[in-house]
Length: 317
Image (cartoon, rainbow, N blue to C red; front, top):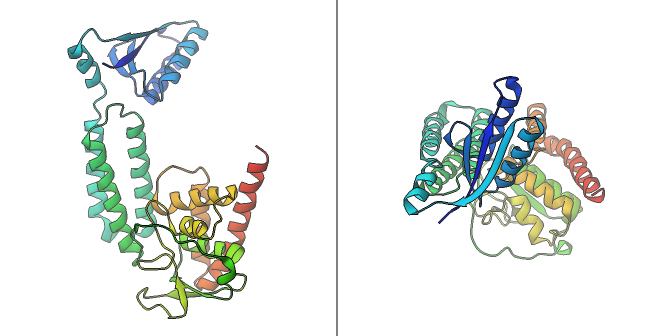
């Protein structure tokens, strides 16, 4: 049976600030409410330490709080406790939101869709973080969100690559000098970052070709970030990460952090705090430069600064 933590708290009616602070903290832990002032959490929850901290916080504020670790008396009581953590309603609400966004794909702008996808991704992660007894609902909603993302990207960015499977081939930079590199026109973050990676770490004299139709790649060009390209999404990695791994650049911590940033902006996943600012900056660059070569030249400065910034942060740790 489940190991449980029980928090009892007796809070004064005033000042109300303490009650609000405790309520917000309890909500963040995902604790279930047995009755007013009595809260429950499985010991295995990653937020369990926060419940212990909350006991101390309440005590320091002069109120009464006590923690108890225990087992349910039998399976029936254990299941009763588990029912307090049923997230099916929250997953159902999220699934409905996904359906509503799907219905608006053709009438929404790329900016609106990206913003909506980011919000849905954050909602899913928030629910999953407190879904202590997962069911098939979590997988169902995650799959629906992944399908929505693919369909939305296919609408506002034709040729957006679907993840392929298999090993990532190792390559040497010495064999890739003065090459022609082809990708889809009007590059977004993954394509711009990959082009920057090529310029700074792989090919000292690259030429970039911006494709209106990814199926028409020059025979002498290496393609990246479209279906069937030499460098594209593989498994859970975006093109930037795949290209870095292919050329043996994975030991560079700053590049790794940049890859995590690009991944989150491009396909979602684990949030990266710099993402919103970088996405806004790239959106601004796209609005400023209609020519893709000029867009890349401007973006290079941005990625240079990000790389140096990540490097400095790593050295200061």
